[in-house]
Length: 104
Image (tube, rainbow, N blue to C red):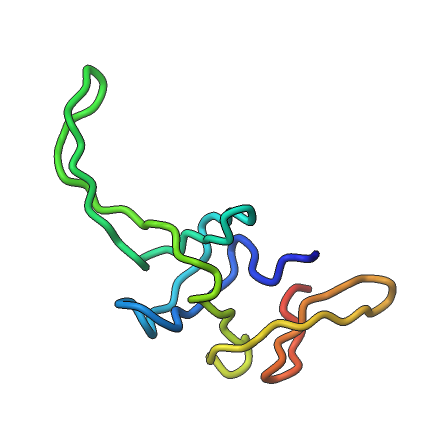
């Protein structure tokens, strides 16, 4: 199955404490159905100092489930579902809201 959300896509959070926030997908894990989105689902990690690194409290993005995010429509800047269309022998992702082709 083709991926509906890919690394580098702009997405919006649909549910949870970060509802309404947007960000770019940094990493995707299809096996766990989770994605890491820049600036969303921030958690604090308390890290012990090692010989090479300082210790302290660091903030980083935690993975968020794919069902809680949606692609942002390139035309309307709102959440959209993703469809597929074959043009010139190539399969392309299409925003269902506006019909706009997402990649190339």
